[in-house]
Image (cartoon, rainbow, N blue to C red):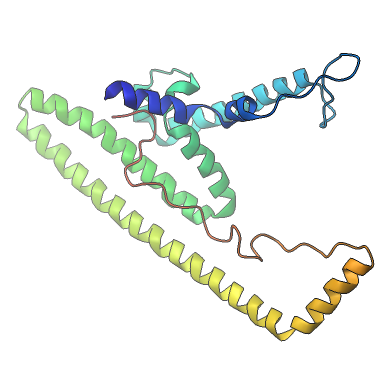
Length: 231
C-alpha cells in the first residue's frame, strides 16, 4: 500500500509539460532535413531551455512558499528539490498562484488552512514522541492546541464556503442582468450579427465569464489534502 501511495504521488508531481511532450504528435521532418520549424520564432533547443528556466523559477517560488507557510512538511522533505517528491503540493501551489490573481480573499483563506494543517502535522510528530514516553502532561498540552487549531480550521472552512456562495450569487446576478439585456435586444443582436457576417467582419467574441464559462471560483480541494508528502 505504501508503494502504491508513493507511486501515485510521483505521477501527480510530474510537471504537466512532461505529459504534453509525451502525448503531443511528433513533428514531421522538414524537406531537405534540418530542425522542425518553430511557430514561436525560437528553435526547439531555445524553447526547451526557456521551459527549463520557467520550471526552475516555479520551483524556487514554491520552495519559498513552503518555507513560509508549511515549514514542518518542508523540513520533512530534507531540502530535497526533486519535483518527483513534492507530492500533491506541485498542483496545489500551481492552483494557488492562479487563485491569488483571481480571488485574493479566497487565496488568503486557503493559505491559512495550509498553515494550520502544517502546524497540526508537526504536533502529531510531537504527540507520538510524548506517547512513547508516556508523558501525559505533554499529551494534554498538544491535544489542547490541536483542539484550538481544529476550531480555527473549521471556522475557516465555513468562511470559505460563505465566500464562495457570495461569489456565485454575484455571478448569478450578473448573468441574469445579461440575460435580460439579450432578451430585450434580441432583434438588434440578430441584425448586428448578420451584418457583421455579410461584411466579412467576424462578430466580436464575448468573454468567457460573460458567457458563463469560468465565472465561478476554483473548486475547493478535498479536505485534509496533504501539503507536501504524507504525514
